[in-house]
Length: 254
Image (tube, rainbow, N blue to C red; front, top):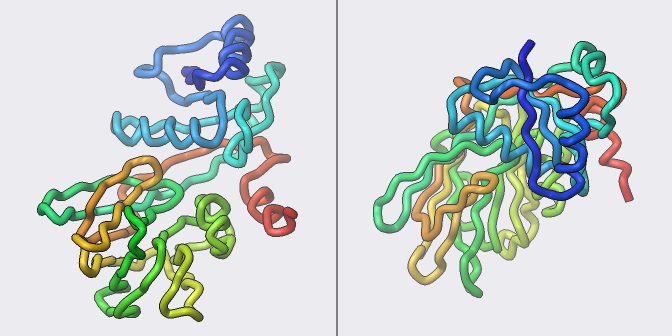
Protein backbone atom coordinates (compact mmCIF):
# COMPACT_ATOMS: atom_id res chain seq x y z
CA UNK A 1 0.00 0.00 0.00
CA UNK A 2 1.39 3.39 -1.03
CA UNK A 3 1.31 6.06 1.66
CA UNK A 4 1.89 9.80 1.58
CA UNK A 5 3.21 11.98 4.39
CA UNK A 6 1.48 15.29 5.17
CA UNK A 7 3.08 17.52 7.78
CA UNK A 8 2.02 20.58 9.75
CA UNK A 9 4.41 23.55 9.34
CA UNK A 10 5.20 23.57 13.09
CA UNK A 11 8.77 22.79 14.16
CA UNK A 12 7.94 19.59 16.15
CA UNK A 13 6.00 18.15 13.21
CA UNK A 14 8.77 19.01 10.75
CA UNK A 15 11.40 17.37 12.96
CA UNK A 16 9.28 14.23 13.29
CA UNK A 17 8.75 14.16 9.53
CA UNK A 18 12.51 14.07 8.95
CA UNK A 19 12.72 10.94 11.10
CA UNK A 20 9.88 9.25 9.20
CA UNK A 21 11.33 10.13 5.80
CA UNK A 22 14.62 8.52 6.79
CA UNK A 23 12.95 5.38 8.14
CA UNK A 24 10.23 4.61 5.56
CA UNK A 25 9.35 4.91 1.88
CA UNK A 26 6.73 7.47 0.84
CA UNK A 27 4.64 8.07 -2.27
CA UNK A 28 3.35 11.22 -3.92
CA UNK A 29 0.00 12.37 -2.55
CA UNK A 30 -1.66 11.89 -5.94
CA UNK A 31 -0.68 8.20 -6.01
CA UNK A 32 -1.12 7.31 -2.33
CA UNK A 33 -3.61 4.78 -0.99
CA UNK A 34 -3.47 6.32 2.49
CA UNK A 35 -2.08 9.35 4.32
CA UNK A 36 -0.01 9.68 7.47
CA UNK A 37 -0.62 13.16 8.93
CA UNK A 38 1.65 14.81 11.51
CA UNK A 39 0.24 17.68 13.56
CA UNK A 40 -2.72 18.44 15.79
CA UNK A 41 -6.48 18.25 15.47
CA UNK A 42 -6.59 21.38 13.33
CA UNK A 43 -4.17 19.83 10.86
CA UNK A 44 -6.24 16.62 10.77
CA UNK A 45 -9.33 18.67 9.84
CA UNK A 46 -7.26 20.53 7.23
CA UNK A 47 -6.11 17.20 5.77
CA UNK A 48 -9.65 15.81 5.60
CA UNK A 49 -10.98 19.00 4.02
CA UNK A 50 -8.13 18.92 1.52
CA UNK A 51 -9.26 15.48 0.35
CA UNK A 52 -12.83 16.71 0.00
CA UNK A 53 -11.56 19.57 -2.15
CA UNK A 54 -9.46 17.25 -4.34
CA UNK A 55 -12.34 14.74 -4.52
CA UNK A 56 -9.90 11.89 -3.88
CA UNK A 57 -10.51 10.34 -0.48
CA UNK A 58 -8.19 7.83 1.23
CA UNK A 59 -7.80 6.72 4.88
CA UNK A 60 -5.80 8.99 7.22
CA UNK A 61 -3.64 7.89 10.16
CA UNK A 62 -2.72 10.91 12.27
CA UNK A 63 0.04 11.24 14.86
CA UNK A 64 -0.14 13.99 17.44
CA UNK A 65 2.47 16.73 17.34
CA UNK A 66 0.04 19.49 18.26
CA UNK A 67 -1.68 20.63 21.45
CA UNK A 68 -4.76 18.47 22.05
CA UNK A 69 -4.58 15.65 19.54
CA UNK A 70 -8.06 14.33 20.18
CA UNK A 71 -8.29 13.03 16.60
CA UNK A 72 -4.70 11.79 16.53
CA UNK A 73 -2.66 8.76 17.62
CA UNK A 74 0.43 8.98 19.78
CA UNK A 75 3.62 10.02 18.02
CA UNK A 76 6.42 7.49 17.66
CA UNK A 77 8.66 6.62 14.75
CA UNK A 78 9.01 2.90 15.51
CA UNK A 79 6.91 0.07 14.05
CA UNK A 80 4.78 2.24 11.77
CA UNK A 81 4.05 -0.64 9.36
CA UNK A 82 2.74 -2.79 12.20
CA UNK A 83 0.61 0.05 13.58
CA UNK A 84 -0.99 0.71 10.22
CA UNK A 85 -1.73 -3.00 9.72
CA UNK A 86 -3.48 -3.22 13.10
CA UNK A 87 -5.23 0.16 13.04
CA UNK A 88 -9.01 0.37 13.38
CA UNK A 89 -10.94 2.37 10.81
CA UNK A 90 -13.58 4.91 11.78
CA UNK A 91 -15.93 6.31 9.13
CA UNK A 92 -17.69 9.67 9.24
CA UNK A 93 -20.08 11.48 6.91
CA UNK A 94 -19.60 15.26 7.00
CA UNK A 95 -22.30 17.87 7.31
CA UNK A 96 -23.22 20.00 4.32
CA UNK A 97 -23.84 23.72 4.90
CA UNK A 98 -25.79 25.60 2.25
CA UNK A 99 -25.82 29.31 3.03
CA UNK A 100 -27.45 32.22 1.27
CA UNK A 101 -26.18 35.74 1.93
CA UNK A 102 -28.32 38.89 2.11
CA UNK A 103 -27.04 39.68 -1.41
CA UNK A 104 -28.33 36.36 -2.76
CA UNK A 105 -24.95 34.59 -3.03
CA UNK A 106 -25.18 30.81 -2.56
CA UNK A 107 -22.32 29.05 -0.74
CA UNK A 108 -22.02 25.31 -0.09
CA UNK A 109 -19.35 23.88 2.22
CA UNK A 110 -18.71 20.62 4.13
CA UNK A 111 -18.17 20.44 7.89
CA UNK A 112 -16.61 17.55 9.79
CA UNK A 113 -17.01 18.98 13.31
CA UNK A 114 -19.78 21.55 13.23
CA UNK A 115 -21.69 24.27 11.43
CA UNK A 116 -22.08 27.39 13.56
CA UNK A 117 -23.98 30.66 13.16
CA UNK A 118 -22.46 33.60 15.04
CA UNK A 119 -23.38 37.23 15.57
CA UNK A 120 -21.04 39.67 13.81
CA UNK A 121 -21.56 42.77 15.98
CA UNK A 122 -22.55 43.80 19.52
CA UNK A 123 -26.16 43.09 18.55
CA UNK A 124 -27.44 39.64 19.51
CA UNK A 125 -28.52 37.35 16.71
CA UNK A 126 -32.21 36.62 16.18
CA UNK A 127 -32.85 33.33 14.42
CA UNK A 128 -35.83 31.27 13.34
CA UNK A 129 -35.06 27.55 13.67
CA UNK A 130 -36.74 24.92 11.52
CA UNK A 131 -36.35 21.13 11.72
CA UNK A 132 -37.63 18.95 8.86
CA UNK A 133 -39.82 21.75 7.54
CA UNK A 134 -41.37 22.57 10.92
CA UNK A 135 -40.60 25.78 12.81
CA UNK A 136 -39.49 24.71 16.30
CA UNK A 137 -38.29 28.12 17.53
CA UNK A 138 -39.97 31.28 16.22
CA UNK A 139 -37.22 33.47 17.64
CA UNK A 140 -33.96 32.36 19.21
CA UNK A 141 -32.09 35.36 20.64
CA UNK A 142 -28.46 34.42 21.23
CA UNK A 143 -24.81 34.94 20.41
CA UNK A 144 -25.15 32.02 18.00
CA UNK A 145 -26.09 28.38 17.53
CA UNK A 146 -24.27 25.33 16.22
CA UNK A 147 -24.94 21.88 14.80
CA UNK A 148 -22.31 19.31 15.79
CA UNK A 149 -21.54 15.78 14.66
CA UNK A 150 -20.52 13.09 17.18
CA UNK A 151 -16.90 13.70 16.15
CA UNK A 152 -17.30 17.42 16.75
CA UNK A 153 -19.38 17.11 19.91
CA UNK A 154 -16.24 17.34 22.09
CA UNK A 155 -14.99 20.49 20.33
CA UNK A 156 -16.82 23.86 20.13
CA UNK A 157 -20.08 22.12 21.06
CA UNK A 158 -18.69 20.97 24.43
CA UNK A 159 -17.33 24.46 25.17
CA UNK A 160 -20.86 25.80 24.57
CA UNK A 161 -22.22 23.32 27.16
CA UNK A 162 -23.56 20.97 24.49
CA UNK A 163 -23.84 17.19 24.97
CA UNK A 164 -21.14 14.66 24.13
CA UNK A 165 -22.56 12.25 21.56
CA UNK A 166 -21.52 8.59 21.34
CA UNK A 167 -19.25 8.17 18.36
CA UNK A 168 -21.38 5.55 16.62
CA UNK A 169 -24.68 7.30 17.30
CA UNK A 170 -26.79 8.54 14.35
CA UNK A 171 -27.29 11.87 16.10
CA UNK A 172 -26.58 15.59 15.85
CA UNK A 173 -26.31 18.13 18.66
CA UNK A 174 -28.17 21.43 18.21
CA UNK A 175 -26.61 23.76 20.78
CA UNK A 176 -27.26 27.47 21.42
CA UNK A 177 -24.37 29.81 22.23
CA UNK A 178 -25.19 32.16 25.14
CA UNK A 179 -28.98 32.03 24.61
CA UNK A 180 -30.98 35.01 25.92
CA UNK A 181 -34.47 33.99 24.78
CA UNK A 182 -35.94 31.48 25.36
CA UNK A 183 -33.98 31.37 28.63
CA UNK A 184 -34.69 27.76 29.50
CA UNK A 185 -33.84 26.29 26.10
CA UNK A 186 -30.46 24.56 26.18
CA UNK A 187 -30.50 22.77 22.85
CA UNK A 188 -31.65 19.47 21.38
CA UNK A 189 -30.37 16.10 20.19
CA UNK A 190 -31.65 15.25 16.73
CA UNK A 191 -31.35 12.29 14.33
CA UNK A 192 -28.60 12.77 11.78
CA UNK A 193 -31.10 12.50 8.90
CA UNK A 194 -32.75 15.73 10.05
CA UNK A 195 -32.73 18.82 7.85
CA UNK A 196 -32.12 22.03 9.79
CA UNK A 197 -32.93 25.46 8.43
CA UNK A 198 -31.97 28.74 10.09
CA UNK A 199 -33.42 32.08 9.00
CA UNK A 200 -31.79 35.27 10.21
CA UNK A 201 -34.33 37.77 11.50
CA UNK A 202 -33.38 41.39 10.69
CA UNK A 203 -30.04 40.43 9.04
CA UNK A 204 -29.07 44.05 8.29
CA UNK A 205 -29.40 45.34 11.86
CA UNK A 206 -28.26 42.04 13.39
CA UNK A 207 -25.74 40.53 10.92
CA UNK A 208 -24.79 36.87 11.31
CA UNK A 209 -21.95 34.78 9.87
CA UNK A 210 -22.04 31.04 9.20
CA UNK A 211 -18.98 28.82 9.65
CA UNK A 212 -18.50 25.25 8.40
CA UNK A 213 -15.42 24.17 10.39
CA UNK A 214 -12.92 26.65 8.94
CA UNK A 215 -14.99 28.13 6.08
CA UNK A 216 -16.77 31.36 7.02
CA UNK A 217 -19.58 33.10 5.13
CA UNK A 218 -20.45 36.64 6.25
CA UNK A 219 -23.85 38.34 6.30
CA UNK A 220 -26.04 35.28 5.80
CA UNK A 221 -29.81 35.43 5.38
CA UNK A 222 -30.45 31.68 5.75
CA UNK A 223 -28.49 28.47 6.36
CA UNK A 224 -29.49 24.87 5.62
CA UNK A 225 -27.63 21.98 7.31
CA UNK A 226 -27.86 18.30 6.33
CA UNK A 227 -25.69 15.18 6.58
CA UNK A 228 -23.87 14.42 3.31
CA UNK A 229 -24.28 10.66 2.95
CA UNK A 230 -22.67 10.67 -0.49
CA UNK A 231 -19.27 11.30 1.13
CA UNK A 232 -17.46 9.08 3.65
CA UNK A 233 -14.17 9.92 5.34
CA UNK A 234 -11.96 7.35 7.10
CA UNK A 235 -9.66 7.97 10.06
CA UNK A 236 -7.45 5.19 11.45
CA UNK A 237 -6.61 4.65 15.12
CA UNK A 238 -4.42 2.37 17.18
CA UNK A 239 -6.61 -0.34 18.78
CA UNK A 240 -5.60 0.72 22.30
CA UNK A 241 -6.34 4.38 21.65
CA UNK A 242 -9.66 4.34 19.79
CA UNK A 243 -11.63 7.52 19.26
CA UNK A 244 -14.80 6.18 20.91
CA UNK A 245 -12.82 5.56 24.12
CA UNK A 246 -11.54 9.11 24.05
CA UNK A 247 -15.04 10.51 23.67
CA UNK A 248 -16.28 8.40 26.59
CA UNK A 249 -13.41 9.53 28.83
CA UNK A 250 -13.87 13.18 27.89
CA UNK A 251 -17.07 13.18 29.97
CA UNK A 252 -14.94 12.70 33.10
CA UNK A 253 -12.30 15.32 32.29
CA UNK A 254 -11.98 18.11 34.85
